[in-house]
Amino acid sequence: MMKTPKSIDEKWFSDPVLQAFADLRGVEFRPMFGGVAVYQKRGKQKVMLAYAGGTAKEEWRGLLVVTDYKHHETLKKKFPDLVPNFMLKKWLQISDEHPAFKKILQGIYDLAVQASPLIGVVQKPRKRKTVAKKK
Image (cartoon, rainbow, N blue to C red; front, side, top):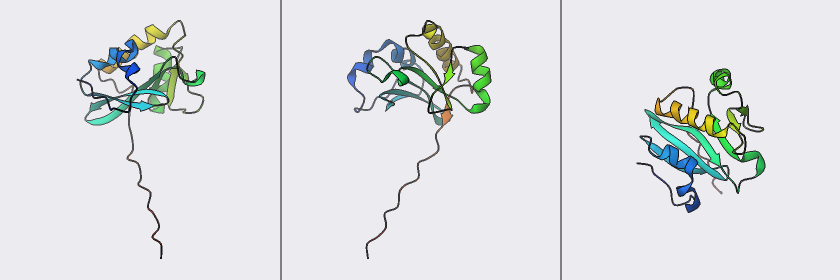
């Protein structure tokens, strides 16, 4: 069963793209990039992908898949229409309006079901900011 924080707009709960991932074991949705990120617990929590549909800015719309750089070439051979995101080079992306979108979505879902190391990265813990004490 998926976890969904209250900070995610309810429109995403019925989105067919996200619903495709809702049945995966250990899945959690969180807001990201004006859309929703899909995390999956596989030992450690991994962010696998983000999806931003219709209301997102054009350059963020579609499916964004995060992977280690060492897997980029393998994924691009498997899914030639995935391209590096313009800003986040670790993320590969395809627009939700691209003709190959559904095929790639299914392929990424299949990799998630297999817990493939090709998709997802373990996020590094954020460093807490220290506040200087006033004298």
